[in-house]
Image 1 (cartoon, rainbow, N blue to C red):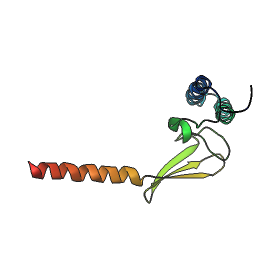
Image 2 (cartoon, helix red, strand yellow; image 1 turned 120 degrees about the vertical axis):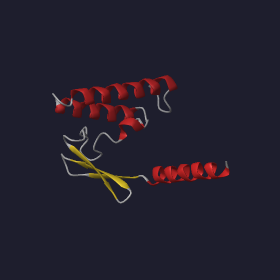
Image 3 (tube, rainbow, N blue to C red; image 1 turned 45 degrees about the horizontal axis):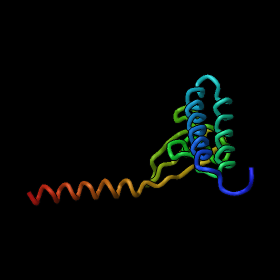
Image 4 (cartoon, one colour; image 1 turned 60 degrees about the horizontal axis):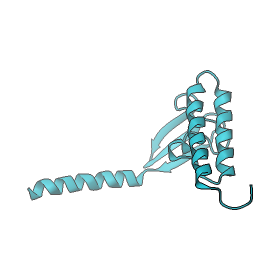
Length: 121
């Protein structure tokens, strides 16, 4: 294959395959955690080869440092600390910090608008 951008159909197949690999990783984690880690590595290789992002649904389900599949309650802990979600990898100790300002802001705005709507009626 020549250099340059890949055709759209190839990218769609790669994303579909990444979804399948992460779903399998989730199913296999209980019995074969090493296999689920291998699935994560394969999905990362696909995203690198086809220059695509890992789907948002799965982007927070693996450790960015050690490439292990994270399963909350088994090898990962999830905490809410100071308006951010901290995901701690149980394998290497890496902490992923994800802010959730937007969600709180949208919730506050929706509540304000509903109160305003009730007062207008």
